[in-house]
Length: 220
Image 1 (tube, helix red, strand yellow):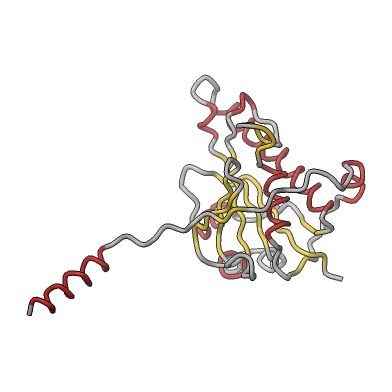
Image 2 (cartoon, one colour; image 1 turned 180 degrees about the vertical axis):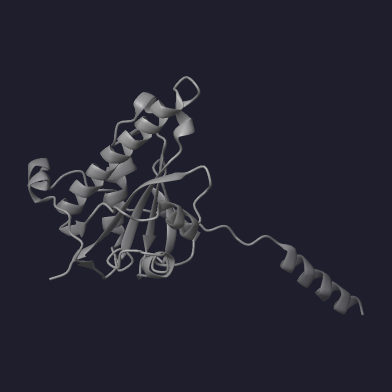
């Protein structure tokens, strides 16, 4: 009886124990040279005809770092008003040998990704009403989400929103230039229900999606 009671207690404790938190995936060190700014500007274009296979960790590392990574202590590659950094950056990825499919949040300080939700672009974005078909087919979908309240009460609401939108644009251009440098394709999304994307990806309520950029290999 004592053995059965002990086994029952152990099973109960295991059932009540919280599930393990996803462990951050450390990204490779981004490359700092090898492609000129002028060349990236010359080759940047909007490309919707993109496909898999999934992006590798080196590509993800370069793209994430270019848009929101740290290039010196506590400062990022993209400028921010008063260095408040209102943006959070996510990427929805298809399954690969390097990274299981899911929604991942980027940590600029740690240069790492942490999974926040299961699912790939097709599963999460495909069912959204009037979703453009090319978007869920991308092997990676990058999302910028802003928390304008980080600018504080000294700024009026309109200025906070404007600064967040401005920073989203700067980060989007940095990502787009890096896409060109890597020989990939991407387009900034327009005409999509951002509230529906927010719900599908499970982002925190206070984070407001500002920009979505699907990225993939150029279909030949």
